[in-house]
Length: 410
Image (cartoon, rainbow, N blue to C red; front, side):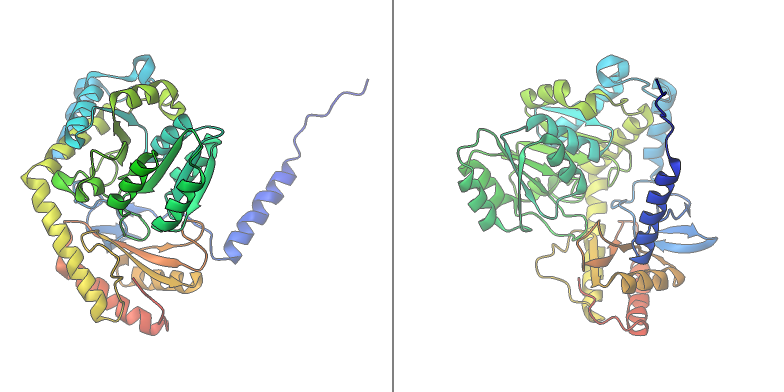
């Protein structure tokens, strides 16, 4: 009998990879890592030169806060460098419990569970709660982690146009006989800097008996009472069934949390594979998150949110003055400003121009955003100065004229 040849034809793999990379380059969609030097702060170094960082999610500027750094070091000294196990094995330590309790108190929810990242959290929530025969209603601009969670759940997914609640209502009516239905939205949409109308969404969720999940990743620390997020801003925290937030943006650490009623958290603890089969957060990340949340809840957090809001208004006014209109729908307290150009090549050229002018603000292209909506995404930190924004505005005005970009809008 002739032996079966199990040898892999690696040339086919090489051809496939090479062809795909070539296509990405042809369409100006190829990405590469850009190494920056220093901590995530307003001034960093890139290619040996100082640049103004305008692409970080370090909204409150806590990434290099000495107390946050010190807390991470002390946690490592006391609890070790790693949890080295999944939470249900031996990875759930005293420090993890302290963080869960602090977040639950802060978010005014019964219990909290920790995940390795926001991506893992959203996958865990949706794929474990929903299944075949169920329906998930998802905003078309929701984060990729939500989209992936929907896909993994095997539930039917009804995608409604961005913030179009009449279509959402229509979909909810059409699926009234389904046993389990879940609405999931970003509180703040990270590529557009706008809000989900959570007060109206809550009304629909209650009217049609649907579970509501809100991804507070980009609202945590920035919006609402004590920085609790978009649901707090709309005064609907109690009505939001599940609140997800990340530790790696305003809270200047790493990981994510999900806060809800006790039975929901107990269910996720037993069913969410991205929780069960992942190593627990390292003590250093937990230690820094503990300190960041305490700062965010106190006077320091209030001061930084006020500064961030002032800077966001300043940039908004500045963009209008140089002919880049700011959408009336945009909440000016949100420190995310998308300059939508549309054409990918023009967007890349403007990003390169800004880089040469000392502004680190990268082009965002498909598939991160929809075709024809390539943009420069500007994000502010509470530690920026008005002179940093003035430099950005000057570079934008000159760059747009030089590159003949007239369709730039915010």
